[in-house]
Length: 131
Length: 253
Image (cartoon, rainbow over all chains, first blue to last red; front, side, top):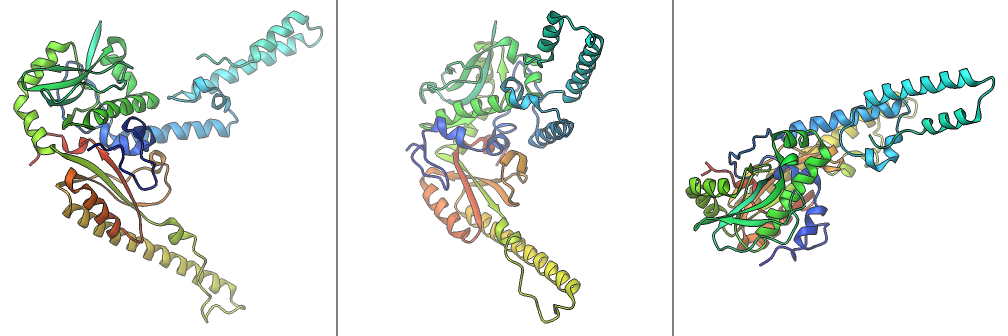
């Protein structure tokens, strides 16, 4: 008897491999994160418990919310930055510093801006996406 | 250099490794003794050594990937045989170390396999029906709520809403107790989990039961029918079948 054909409430029966993807993360985490036979392997690692993970998620969401309040949300449009943990405060500080530098540049060049330098400043104004 | 990630333990000769990708994208294989086999995967040492795994635990996206892949291999293996799931992030230097571990812990693994043989895990959750608790229209104003006393009318309405929420919640708890009791009668064992955080589950309804049951395969239909019947009128969610992750720890009766 296989399990793939058992229909679930509100859920379409699928092959086992895909059924995993359709299951909510909380259900998987509470079983897989800290359950199963405990064997002392050669590599030691401290696993998080689900409570700790929830706290981390809260912190992550809180810091993202705070950054968004400040109008900094460009990473949300960049898939390479949208997952994982990021230090938004550091990012914030770095961006402010860069804006300050760009403004200082522009002020210095306001009288007679050489076209080449202006183009360079424009290029630098694009946020980097590969960090 | 590479390391060996252990997914699950099965009896020798129970079958080949499943045709799915593991935690490092690798194809799982079996390492065995005469008595037992471990479903393992060869993983890179830079991502799966102590430093690599410690870093992974700081990265939610990576935790999710590891958890889903680990579960995927165990679930695929459990499709056609009894396997004892091994805890996430159990990593050995090489196959010899795995074989040594299988020999050393052989009796304990056999006990676990005996306990979960032909049994699978089913999750049962009961939620407070948010629509009934909060969004029903307010009750009809009583006689004291005359038009010339709008303040009193408002307070009475607020109290009625609050009383109704409390009643809905109390009735959901009663359903939760009934469901848990009935489910237990049709199961071999039970574990209760903490309520799920809405950020993880994506559901905003209040959860009043979050438990998981070890059920004989032969009694699964009976179990599911009984839970559905006991949960009539409430929001009941069943998940499964799961490999018996929650019942694979040793030292249980």
